[in-house]
Amino acid sequence: GISDATIIQTISQLQDRYGDKKAESILGNCGIKLCLNAANRTTATYFKDLLDKTTVKVDTESESKQYGKENRTSSMSENESFAARDLMTAGEIMQMPADIGIILFQHKPPIQVKKAFQFQLFPGVTEKYEVSQFDYHAKPSAEQLQKLTLAQQAFEEDIAKKAVAKQTEQEQLEKDFFGFEVVEQEVTFESALEELNGDLNISGSEPNK
Image (cartoon, rainbow, N blue to C red):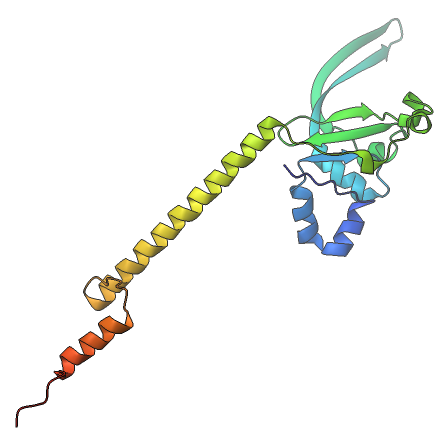
């Protein structure tokens, strides 16, 4: 298959280049969205809305004291409640550490990831193993070739079915228009001349005087 990676600095940049509707369409066609950093509040707000809400438990406690002339009383109460809040606020997204990112999938919960910097995980590997991209030769697997063959066969069968359907529709239109079925017949010069002679009653003999 074909995959495409669209990299933008900010959502505002995309909206300014393509307009709000086209920018929304481009973003909507991205199956996976990766937020490495939010450079402005518009971008942070966009990802905040995608992350949606979460439920948090709120514990509250209060203490009341009463003082009298002869005695003093106090009471303590604890309450537990649940409230909705943003999974991450725009401010929290903008203040993410440099090594933290967010990945959002379609139909799956988002995840927070730690960035893997190649130069830190494998120091000096690019200098030790220098490989040119021109040295890479792609070779399709047997499974891929089989899928390609099946796809080509399905495409050719679909084209043939559409051609038959179009021909049938054309014949039906001609039949409905002319009132009879139009039959295609190969016409040659000899057959046309013979038909013309028959219509004009022309023969090779001289006419009777």
